[in-house]
Image (cartoon, rainbow, N blue to C red; front, side):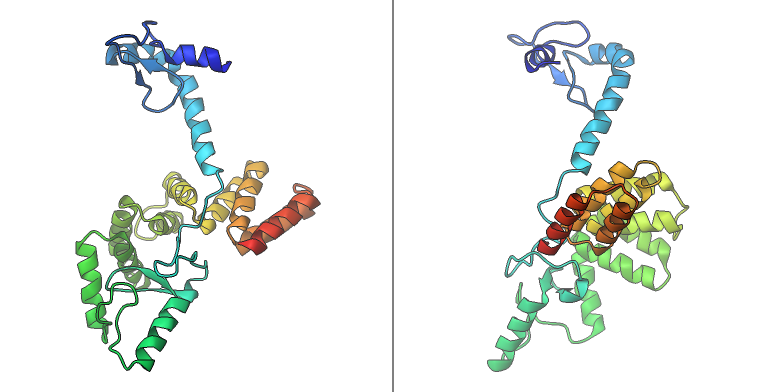
Length: 279
């Protein structure tokens, strides 16, 4: 369909054909961008005819989101130096007082400043007193959780999981995911895959992996590629290329294996390696 014809379709109700003029306002289909309607009745009448096209367009829109190269990873930037946080979580730490993830460089610079100036230890971001005991850390974390901080909820959920309390872990991670925490979606996908605290559910695992992937989580994208590999190698390779450009090492290994099997060209592999090194 040409752009002109597409514009004409969108300017008329898909069911009755009435044009959007004067006081007549059309509303878009709730799940796709293909058609518009003048009323709820027209929407209901047209659903049987539109259902298949709508479903196909929904899948296309989902893929557009899924295979878009993220500007950064889900980890974001250090709130102090504004440099992207590395994927290696050993090179950053979370402050329990404000739930900010701060790179080791900024943490070290703050500790050096305090040591040389004989200053009291404080958080490099919010400047609150640094807790000296685990009880104080727990109290600060609980305050953040009560304030609906998704990062604090996710960390508490992971603590429960490490202790084997998967039910509490699932509750905290679910709440964190609802509040938009990408890492929580990734962890929930793992719980649905392994059946920890919940029944194994491939559909829910895939849904959480896709949300995490769209949110810029490299490991989630790599895992999604591994799942797609059996049914659609081309989609798997697309996921691995994007994950490799985000710095994911496992995706580079997967691309090398795809190259050996003849599913990936030498030039494309070289480009993926350059992007991985630049990440």
